[in-house]
Length: 72
Length: 123
Image 1 (cartoon, rainbow over the protein chains, first blue to last red):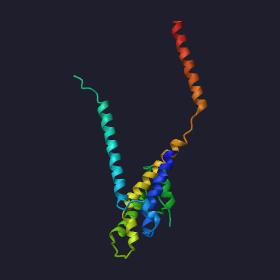
Image 2 (image 1 turned 45 degrees about the vertical axis):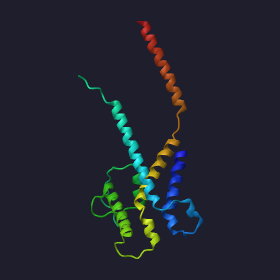
Image 3 (image 1 turned 90 degrees about the vertical axis):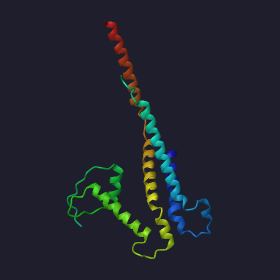
Image 4 (image 1 turned 90 degrees about the horizontal axis):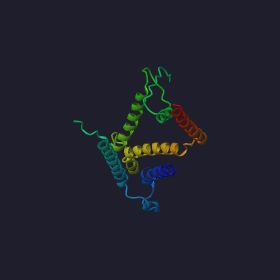
């Protein structure tokens, strides 16, 4: 259940950041809770890279562990 | 519009079928497969995005619209990821244990072990 809540939270935060904030006046209070807009593209990009890294490392480790020893 | 030759090829999972049904795609003279539907939908969305991002028709859109359209591909990807994560997490959270079947199985295992023991002794 925590994972459901986390993904909903992430979705709401990102939606507000990307879609709603550009239409809000720049001197509104809510802008201080959100990073500058460049980060809204950079951060998911970095997260995707880290995810790919983790997946690749996992596959590498499992393949290395299950490699059969060479039969003479 | 007439729906004809609606052949389905089940290439994608259940949740994708739901999404395209909601758009109510009416079809024309070719056999419309699910793949074709998806390609069509994605190219329409991609064309609309490209139009706004690169200002291809020289529409003088307000600056805010262009600022919304710029991170749109990343946003759509993230929304899709969140949606799948929610579905998977919800399925895992509402997965129920079968208490009775578990007890029955344990009883059967015990019975089988006793039977095996008896057979060895009879020899």
